[in-house]
Amino acid sequence: MSPTLTPLERKRPALHKLIDELPAEELDLVERVLARLEMDRLWQQVQEGFTQDWTEGKYARLDEIIRDVRTELKQRAA
Image 1 (cartoon, rainbow, N blue to C red):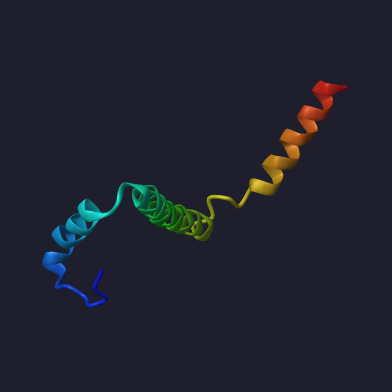
Image 2 (spheres, rainbow, N blue to C red):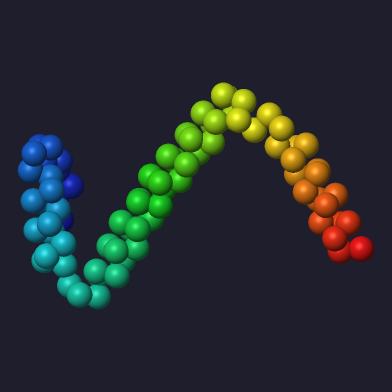
């Protein structure tokens, strides 16, 4: 693999070619790397959503709601 960067419009075909030429035993590693990249990207989106919701005050009553639910669960268990 060459460490040189390819122009943006040629990246996808170049990456497909590299993957196609990989030995079968390395495909699992590539799949895990891609899965990790996807997981990190999705987690970033989730974090951004929670941050936005928190900023908008959507969790202002969260402590109160959790306390009420815990109280109700204790009463049911008793």
